[in-house]
Image (cartoon, rainbow, N blue to C red; front, side, top):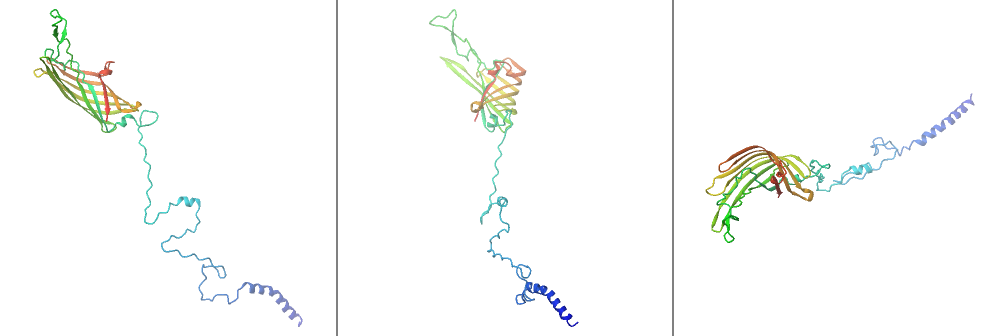
Length: 312
């Protein structure tokens, strides 16, 4: 029993020696360990771990760098830096081009839209059925030599061989207030007279206003179609002692206006009208009124009712 006790003690010591050595190797010496009252190390890590690197303090007013390294996506998404004291400029929005719907395959500006807001000057004849603008044959028209039984080569007979009626024209203007509405106005003026040898000829005078509207119905590249109601009145007097005559027209026309934009002159146009008219004509001893279709109804009307217009 005496021999077994030292042997058992030695065996227990040999068995516990590796565990004691392991614990002694892992534990730091007591001189290294901080006291119990000392503050925890910076970074909040466990005792004995390496402390993280401290960031340098940023200057006052300077932006802190992002902890995430920049990439291609973040760089493209960030706006450009703005210098101090300057405001970011608002990006310019590109102007949307105005597109006019026309009858062409490709939408484009038409000649009619080019003349909106301008003034068009036109000249058109005043058409009559009666010779209300005629002069007196005895004192208003010049004499012409005619062959007669009493005429001789030295003293030919002088008579009025031809005394045509005076052609009265209307000088008018058209102003397109906007794309769909135009205002029309005009004035007719006729003035004349003269002298043949010692023979005075009658002085004639004609005057009259005209007003109307134009409402756009259709618009193509070089052609526009409009409804043009209007009223005109022309008063004529062949001489001071002659009776006055006049012509009054109330019309509701459909007008086609062809612009010369196909040759580079959209301001120049030709207008052709056709519609319904109520007309009153009064001559010296005759009064005539009529209602019906007027304007271009015959090939001759293509010339007689043609309107030449130029926009300024």
